[in-house]
Image (cartoon, rainbow, N blue to C red; front, side, top):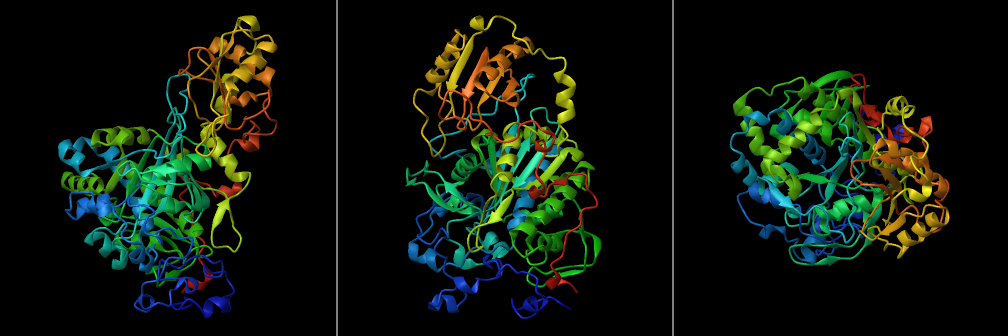
Length: 589
């Protein structure tokens, strides 16, 4: 047998890189040696948080524990407090043992609520199980995505897994009783983007150790203000709650978030068992004694503790970091979706009732989807997407200095975010549809440019940047100088990552294109939208200065290679039944 039980020895002999080699923390199975506190608490198994690990000061957030409070019968929010700084600094970094399973439960909860909604006859009881929170705690929120020509809007849902241990059940599932009062971390983060026409879905994972800017957030319950900072993205949950994680995502990606769903340990195992087993594949025999994963080469159907082991293992796959585990999560999620769409094991009313109880007790959602009926409607939206048009991807990343964290990969990460912002599928299969309709659309103005009514709006403000004062008036003036005398500045506040030009009726497409040409705006940013009354130009954060749109900005420019996710996103299609995990050679048998 060739696995390593001690974290050294054979791994070094085999020569494959380990998580420790790269400086990644080993908190899933105990503290990394560099993070151990020589204090007496350390000797008893509690390691101190490293300097950049939030929770070390005790005052960095209290949210994310409510679902577990309900499960434990507390029935109130008193347990949200993070405790004193000393208590938190002595607590061991969060066990990563079942974070991936929490992610599985988020997705499974949505799908079950959609596929089995007819069985939920006691909505009020289930509604009382759900915990609800504010969507966005930042000062500046991005405006919703524009509707398409048919009035349909794309939908962006942030799926979060909290490592809260604020109940006996969560302590039992996640371990580390010393962490019971520690502010939780958002250790699983996935953005689920459903296209406006519901023809495709993109899921983007971001590694928990991604270092990014966390904007200023205000806790709505006690008014505490958390100043903007730079830290690992999972710590954003400690800055007032999931609404700060939403604000962080909007700042990092420029993608407006419509909803969030957060889940903790409780009720996860029963939901993981609901589908009666999920097929997964490994290229070699794998045995990770730390997560207890042991599978033979090829395909195995896993559930219960096996599923837990698959979802929690990090050492067994890839280079032993969260990156390989994210890929394993994608594979499991795709297989689970295929099982659910096939109606697997979801016909027993008693089982569905138990699953509904577990799912709603474990969930915290934003107020916009704070009822079972709304979650059921959301599930119906998700059901419309064909399996073959579901694409799982990981944010393109690269190691930061020292290798203990990652950062978005310049260029590639921006491209993925731009595709999502512009409602372009990551699988690259949208282009033909666009070309088929393009030939029939007008390209010439419907009237003289002096008579085209144009609204110009200032959307240059972001979570970290104030809007450029007077920007709408400047560009409206530039258009007037170019002969568009009906261009007027609209003072309605906006916040957009990308500049866009929208037109309400098909015959006005030529008018919008004329405006775009005059200002140097790419044609791909001209869109047919039912959400405007006239040709409307929103100046985004990508154009904060100058009378002409900056060349080479704003991601995909319409070329074939720019209409799908880059290779660095490691995309996996939902109908790929042949996907198989690479096994870390240190953990084969």
